[in-house]
Image (tube, chains in turn brown, orange):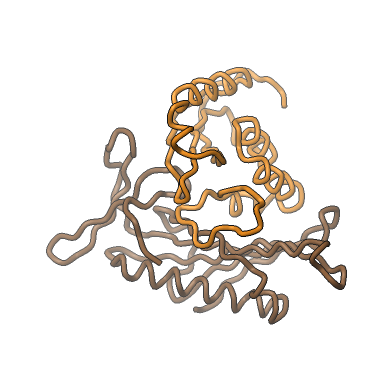
Amino acid sequence: MSLSFPLIDASTGYEIIAFTRRGRWYWYLRHPRTKRFIRRIRELTIKTTVTVDYKEEMAKKRNPLYVDMTVATVLKDSFEPRELLDAETTLIDVAHRELATNFSSGVPTISEVVGIEYFSYAKYHEYLPEVHVEIIWWHREGEHASETEYTTRA
Amino acid sequence: MQVRQNTPQELEVLKIDIDIPWDIFKRLKYTWVATRRAILSTLGYELADWIIHRSQNGKVHAWITVEVRKPLSVWEKAELQFLLGDDHNRSKLNFLRAEKTPEKFDSFNILFSKKVVRSEKGKGGDN
């Protein structure tokens, strides 16, 4: 994986930019059209989303499954881009581990890591290595959905 | 959806995923914004700001900031995003989430900052 700047703040669409000064990394939020600086970013949330869409026609035992899962963590002030990339890899590993734990060991193999969001604030209270997990799932569209939310460690 | 007169007090950000190539969209960009303004105005809302980015796989992500009198319910958000031109597959899932797990709606109302793996299932929805 790589980072291409500017990053995009998932909640507003603003740009997240980073630069170094005297060996220290600074992160800022900027409006993409006006280029106006909005504020310094002191905490950044990274959230990865994993889905499982095991449709009825694929399910040999007629056990379709739809899962939406997010795994997120917060990085504190003056982190480096390298740490951001490492955190992304960690979150994906945790997502696969938690899918296996919550469903079965085969489920990670039919899952899809669909994307990563960045938020320019601490969206959760979990700082790396703690991570925040949210899962919703259902078996058929008409059925009631189940959900769970918890904190774990990477 | 009811048409309403409001006294704007709060801002809500709506996330729109447009599943057409950026090169085509950019020719229509300002017309698209003007028509979103018209749609919102018809529904009694006001467009406060808009941000449009080329998504990582060459399509379009838009963040539409709307002035509202009171916070939108998750169902209203799902409806407004659909009416503003959100990808239909994404809208379908958003309606399902709004219905089944409304308290989790915002967590899964996603426009990705970074796409990790492109879907191979041809199901649209370049979130």
